[in-house]
Image (cartoon, rainbow, N blue to C red; front, side, top):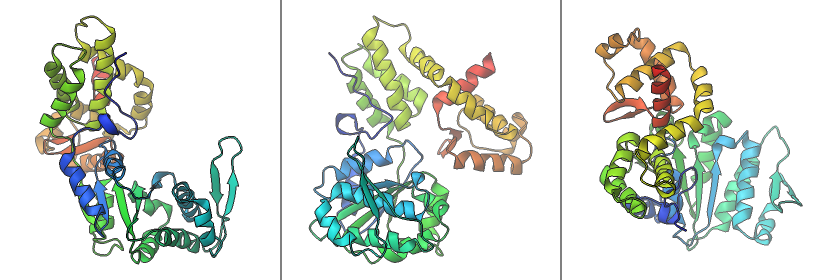
Length: 365
């Protein structure tokens, strides 16, 4: 049985990974040196897939933690230590952990056999995190440098207002660890790493990650469709025309189109059929998201749906009755921070093309 060659929704590896040849070479070069790396891109652009594509080819320990799910410094220390435990043998870790200033509680889930680690709440939780971070340094060496990946690193400011300064004070002394910081909110990440007063000012090499070039993406899609259609180039171009090369949504649409082509004999319009199917699947989610927006946000999103991608101007404000520029700016700032709107060379546009299609369909009813 033929296997769908497209994948979305999780880390993309192996044959599912699309191009990124230059980015792969740059990431490998940076983390093979003594430097640290900061990767910025909107959500679902493939930051994590890119990093894990590179590190999977290296014979080095990798510890990864998503800061979105961290609730405090104690939790940060516990979750980081839990991931260290997954990488290094317990006996090797234990000899260091027994010298921690605050000893964690370690238990094993009898059902999943997963190790759970927790620190008791303390009025001074920083030593917990310092000890865990320094543990990674002690377990590493010049030949086996550890790679520590902090995803959604801008969330560090939400965990604790002083955590960035405290974290920098510890890891700046590490000689055998490469740190990789991933961020999806560009303004916040740039403030952390580009602002002179920030403790992480110029701490590593900054690497913005854009969309996959259209020519490369079309070639990848065309190759994936060859076995299910006689017009793979046409199908690929139509998908890119809708998704505008967004890595996640392109793969998602390609997956559903491939299924339609594989299961149906000569479908009349597989692209439209796939788009309608995905909009229908996410209808309740989109309605919930839409109802959470305030009126000015909704007006701006409708305007951007009608115009697709556009620079903002006085004429644009007047055409769609958006009100004062200051009002539009406030709305734009909110929608960019939560990832609903992205800025590109073409102007501003809605990140999710299926959400844009949902708005258009609802307006047409």
